[in-house]
Image (cartoon, rainbow, N blue to C red; front, side, top):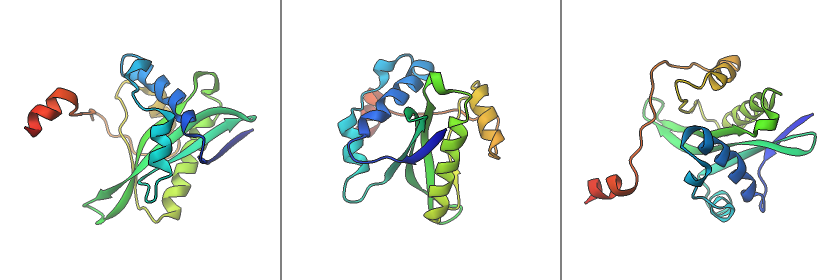
Length: 158
C-alpha cells in the first residue's frame, strides 16, 4: 500500500536520499547535493515557508518525495507551484509511487488555490515523460534546464 503525506518536523533528512538519487542520474554524482537535513528543516518549518514536501511510503517504508516551492506567474497574475523535484527511490520505481506523489502535489496546489503546477524535465528522461503524460500533464518538447551558479553567478553580479 502506498501512503503519501506532508512532511513533518524532524523528517527533513528524508529528502536527502531521493535528492542524491536525482544527482546520481542527472548531475554527475550524489556529492553534487550540498543540502543537509537541517537545511530542509529550516526551510520547511520556518515562520513563513515558501517550500513544501510530500513523502511517500510503500508498506510503511520511505519510498520517495516531492519537493516544491511557491512561484508567481505573470500570465495568471497569481502565485503558482513549481515542482522542484519528484524522486522515487530505485527499489520503489514503477509501483505507483510517482503517480501517488503527483496526485498529492496536485491536491496541495488545488487546496492553496494555485492555478498551475509546473516543472522542468530532462528531454531524455522517458520514464518521467511517461509518468507525467500518464497523469495528464502537457510535456513540451525541446526545453532545457539552465542555471547560473558559483563563479559565473558571482562574476555576472559583479
